[in-house]
Length: 260
View 1 (tube, rainbow, N blue to C red):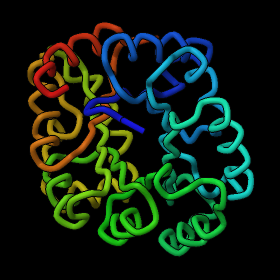
View 2 (cartoon, rainbow, N blue to C red; view 1 turned 90 degrees about the vertical axis):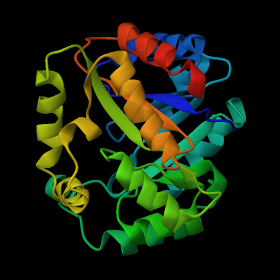
View 3 (tube, rainbow, N blue to C red; view 1 turned 180 degrees about the vertical axis):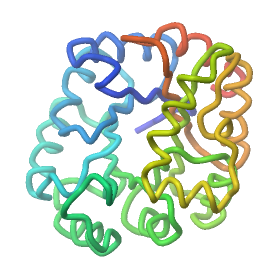
């Protein structure tokens, strides 16, 4: 399974489900290696993405352990992998305390969930990991980590902790243009969540390092900073462009031709 150096991250809030196949086909034509579907989808939501493409890897960002039984995830993975062998990466995460009533002892809950998986092998899953203990678990029990809403300095620290080998695939949201509002409004929503807020406080990170706005070249510089810090793959999320963000995806991958 080859993720490529660059992927796209999409939210069903921005791209209607009936457009996901067309979006994935465009991402594949542009040269992105992975299409990440956010907002805690069911694994079955990847099928139209896979049906519309030939090579691109389809990934979840993330399967939420509080809304899934391991046996159900096993069954859904086995069915999809039989039809599209080697093209599925299952991102798994614990979500947020503020949005999940059952939320408790996230590290223990993740270990228990992984213990219950049978058909989904470690090399076909990654964990949404920010803090050191979850990063360590992503090394031991999965292909690696897919951090979200993080600055390049977090990538550098995560790589030191993971060492060579495990996948490190941070997400980077961005907004093209001089108006900072789309980036800042997006960031403000995530800063209400304690795990993201605490993580950024640890690094004293500027919002522009986490959700840059401006030219494609500026966004590309932040992507390169993640790659230089040890990321294997960066998934970019275009903001402020309704529907399939062709302009943003095209501009950023063109500015990153040296990295693909």
